Amino acid sequence: MVKGYNNNRLTRRSEENCERMGEMSRGYIKRTAIALLFFLITVNLAACGKKDRQPVKTEEHRIPVRIAAAARGDIYEVVKVSGKISPAVEVNVFSKLAGKVESVNFDIGDKVKKGDVLFALDRTDLINQVKQAEAALSMAEANYSSLSGGTLPKQLEQAEANYLNAKDNYERMKALYEEGAVSKQQFESVKLQYTVAKTQYESINLSAPDNLKAAEAQMKQAQAALELARSQLENAVVTSPVSGIVAMRNINPGEMASPGVPVFTIVNLDRVFVEVNISESIINKVEKGQEVAVRVASAGNGEFKGIVTNISPAADPMTRAFPAKVELDNADHTLKGGMFAEILLPTDRREDVIMVPQEAVLDMGNEKIVFVIQGDTAYKRSVVVGIKDGTNIEIINGVKEGENVVVSGQNTLRDKAKVSIVNEGNRGESK
Image (cartoon, rainbow, N blue to C red; front, side, top):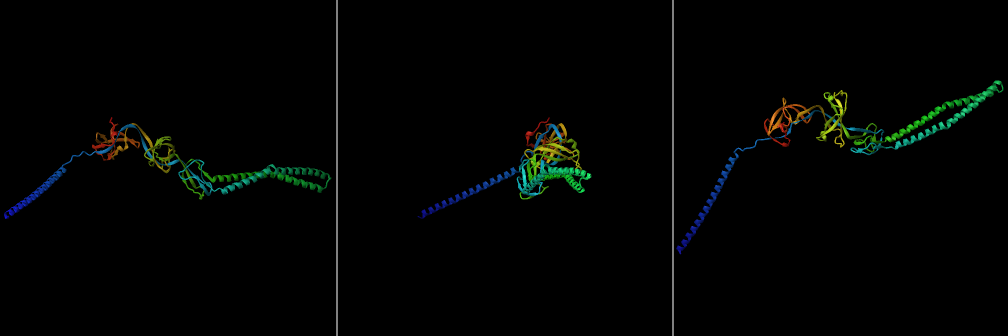
């Protein structure tokens, strides 16, 4: 029994020792694997660090540029002058009468036609004045009619008959008195009647034309008064003198209108003009009827065509410049009064010359240069320039027709710099 028990115990110890050895073996393998993994990571990191420190080959830096080809053509030298745009038609509307405003029919920005009623004053008193003037005229006409065709001729005819009758009586009684056939008292009575009749006839005969003239004058005066009253009534309704657009309104219903104060401004923008001052040095190079380009920054980047319509023959004593006007079509009303405009006046002309865009030429102080592109390289080149027209500049020497010059990006270039052409399609061919 004891012997069997001991054998079993030895067997269990032996199994326990095997288990412990297995666990130790597995731990050793695990630790070895971890160490090996750590070693491999360290080696890889070191390799990457060395690789990063190795020099990397990169492409040479190229400067992006835009180019244009030198071209041959005609060029005009252009002088820029500035001015302000004004409507070709601008009318201030006034009230001829002082009075209370009854109605206003248009506002700023409204279109009006010639003859449209802009506003009206209260006409109650004016209508009454017309009625009074009509009544006064009727009375004056009646008085004149009575004197010229009725009362006055009859009075004159009766006075003449009385005078002639009294005259005959006087001459007959005078003859009888001289013969002693009648008494002195009878003769003096007839003489007195003759004297009175004569005086009345002469008085009426002399005053009749004056009375008729006075009546005629009174009638004409009444006619004038009626015309004035009617004119005042018409002036209470103010109409637009031109077709156009309301640019200013300075009155409202219920307010008092005053003569001499503008209440409406009507403008017609179908045509506009620019007033400019041209210097003495170029005035003889500008002609009436000449076509010029006009730039208006507030109306976009495009150019408008204008015509020189007026040139003053004398300089302004204050500015010593010559006032002139340039007129433009403005059917779409793009241009507004008060906008500033730049007039490009061509003053010199060169034909069949080499030209490049003005921005291609750099002013270096003592010389002017351009960058000419050959392949993918920009070469600095000194040039001699001539006249310019605001867009292009004449090249007298330094660039040939068809050569490509840099028009954008040239400020960062140096001689023989490598470039990348943005607008490759604009490349020309050298001739």
